[in-house]
Image (tube, rainbow, N blue to C red; front, side, top):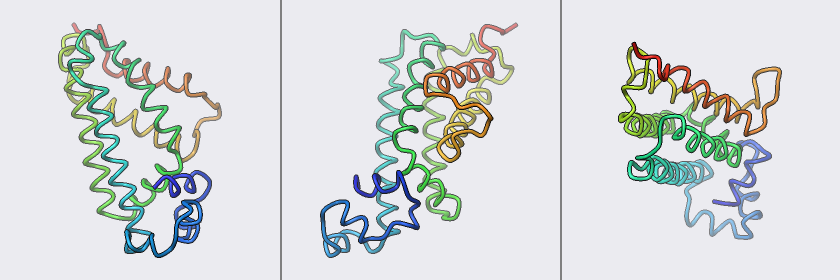
Length: 190
């Protein structure tokens, strides 16, 4: 798995061969085929493993007991950098998984399930702060803010932009936090 992820940092999945993967892993072709039917099955396995890691990480990060004393801004300043860092560290794998999701209904369904899980956890985490959300429809505002954040992160994974200016991770985090809070209209409830 690690070998495949390393190879994806510099190359597309279609440009990587089974021989490349086993050479990087210092393994054998026979050992690869003992575990995987083909290269596509390997990518599906990477996807399932990635999703398990994300679900565990999001559940721990947004654990109600851990974030109980945080206001919305503190929560976002704690959580958003983790998302930014994860996307920065796994760009190649994420590019491969999202490219496959664009053409493979099973990958797409798994991504939709994962995104739904993330949005649900954010909604649960922000529920105690509902009265400070000024947006007229807090549930939709939270969902849209999460989808916007995830979309911006995926855009950055694929294109490192698309704007004319380059942002480092800290600047990108700051802009995502600001956009999230602005969409919720924090403190603007009338």
